[in-house]
Structures are given as C-alpha cells and as structure tokens.
Length: 354
Ligand SMILES: Cc1cc2nc3c(=O)[nH]c(=O)nc-3n(C[C@H](O)[C@H](O)[C@H](O)COP(=O)(O)OP(=O)(O)OC[C@H]3O[C@@H](n4cnc5c(N)ncnc54)[C@H](O)[C@@H]3O)c2cc1C
Image (cartoon, rainbow, N blue to C red):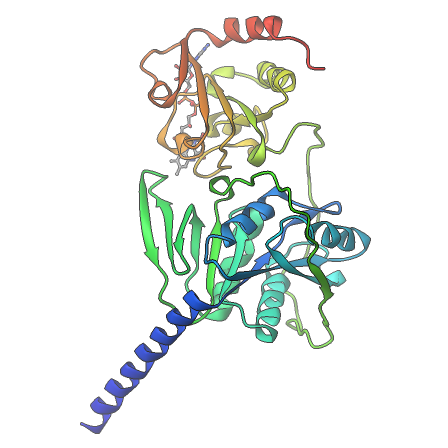
C-alpha cells in the first residue's frame, strides 16, 4: 500500500517537473547549434539551421559551437560571428581531438558545453555530420531527438516527414531535458542578410574536458572528388541522370550539361549502383535531399524513394522516353523523348558559360 502511494507521488512529481520544463522552454529559449565548417568557412547548412532556430521563439538566443583545430578553425569562427544577426555567441573548442568530426569526442563536447551553460535546445543540420553526432548527444542526455524537422510550430512542436516524405508528422516534445533537433535545411532558406552584427567569440576552456581513456574510433582518411561544381545539397540548379544513361562515359553528358548551367550533378540509386558515379551524388530518401530552383531529371523513372529527395524543388523538368513514367506526375515541364537525342541538342543550343 505504502509502495503504491509512493509510486503515485513519484508520478505526480515527475509530471510536475515535466510541466515546469515545458513552460520554461516557451519562456526562455537558448539554443546551441553544432556548426559545420570547412577550410575556414562555415557551411551554408549551418546558417539555415540558425534561421530554423529563430522560429523557436521570439526571445531566443543562439550560440554556435565550432570545434576543430588550428588557424582555419579561428578563421571559421570569425566568419561565423557575422554569419547571421541572430547569433549572439560563438564558442570555439580548439583541440587536436576535434580535428576530424568523430561522433564520440564531439558528442561529449556538446554535453560538456551544455553542463556549463544551460541550453533549452540543441540543433544541427540533417547532414551526415549532424545525423552522426546529434543522436549520440541525445542518448548522452537521455532524451529522444526529433530528426529531420521541416517546420517549427513553437518551442516544442515540430513537423517532420515520414514514409519517404509521403506523410507529415506533428511531434510534440515533452521531455524534461534539452530538446535535440536535426534540421532539414532545404526547408529553412536563408534570405539575404543586410544587417551587419558581430557576435562575441569565446574560447572554451577544455582543461576539464575528459574523453574515454580508450577511444573506440580513429580517423583513417577521407576520399573526396575535387570539383568546381556547386555543392549538391545547396545548388540552385541540379542535373540528374538515371539508369538510362547506361555507362560512365554517357554520364559525362550530364556533367557537361551541369557545367553549362552552373549546376550540381545528381544521380539515382540505380545509376550509383551501376557504378556510373560515386554514391555521394545520390539524390533521394537514402541520399541527399535537394530543393534547387531548377531540377532536371534525365532517364529517371521517378521512384517514390527518389521523389522523396526532390519534391521541394521549385521547377522540375523531366526527360523520359516513357510517357507513363511517374516522374511526369511531379514534373512542371516534361518531354517524352530519348535523352541521347535531347541532351546533345541542349548542349548545342545552350550558350557557353561565361
Ligand atoms: C529502401 C530504398 C531506398 C532507396 N533510396 C533511393 C534513393 O535515395 N534515391 C534513388 O534514386 N533511388 C532509391 N531507391 C531505388 C528506387 O526505388 C529506384 O530503383 C531508383 O530510383 C530507380 O532509378 P532510375 O530511375 O535511374 O532507374 P529506372 O527505374 O530503371 O528508370 C529508368 C528510366 O529511364 C527511362 N529511359 C530509358 N532509356 C531512356 C532514354 N534513352 N531516354 C530517356 N529515358 C529513358 C525509362 O523509361 C525509365 O523510366 C531506393 C530503394 C529502396 C528500396
């Protein structure tokens, strides 16, 4: 009997605690964003994440956390300080331990920073970087993360797509700890910033930062393709080729067209699996999500998993020789024709890029 009453009391207490934390969330919002940076600049996805943070509430403060080492980190920090007027503070963790974005030390770092300054929200973009680190942060904090957020309705209410983007799910966060979110950055475009404001930059004192004695992961190397083309995730124009291209050689036509239009190259999973291009060019549910101004698909059937990655594109153009291909259901402009005739004609008729 006594035990039953005690359990009930506990429940009441935990509910009360939950109630207090939600109310606090809506009053005082302070957000920590795990920033992604490269060669001395922060990535466009991080700025979109800042835009998303501004939807959490009117009086919210936004801090950017940059980890890494050396002069390029300090350069990125100084750029981050003026990347958006709503950023109030840039926190810099400069150490060899963060030279490469390994989830173990980085998640520990986020927890370390959170212990010193209380944050109501912790955010990162839904890139491989964010998807690798933030769920680990959430587990360390014993909270459930809300991933791939496309709309923020309030400080604790979000919309996220499910079933390859075929349904939108409204999620209310009721956890007691910080709300951990990954943001689908194509849903939070950055409008041109006119106001110039510089946030304060503080170096984090890492003398008390402890890592596991034996780190379980180790950075071995990275293979990247050097290309002048814009980044697929944030390009204004994306030209995609599918299985119908038939070979690596033929796929070069897609690359030429992308070059002429100043766009990025994308591919379907079938084209990647066939070895025409590397898998970092895959667009779709298990690849990159894009939302360019112009998306052109050549020899792409429009499978549901591919459409999951392109639906938010402003204008979709499809060229396919099958008039019943599902891609035509989402295309703004469609041409039933053979891509081996259409692409050479386009290449011939488009003016040379200046
Ligand atoms: C769990 C899961 C996740 C997946 N994730 C992804 C993903 O992220 N991205 C993705 O793309 N796919 C993904 N897929 C695969 C997806 O289901 C399709 O198999 C794939 O998108 C098909 O690629 P495709 O359109 O290039 O090939 P196909 O479906 O074979 O279509 C080729 C098209 O080319 C047309 N064609 C042929 N010759 C010509 C020509 N000469 N000129 C013009 N048109 C021509 C044909 O009419 C056809 O419509 C996933 C599948 C699963 C099960």
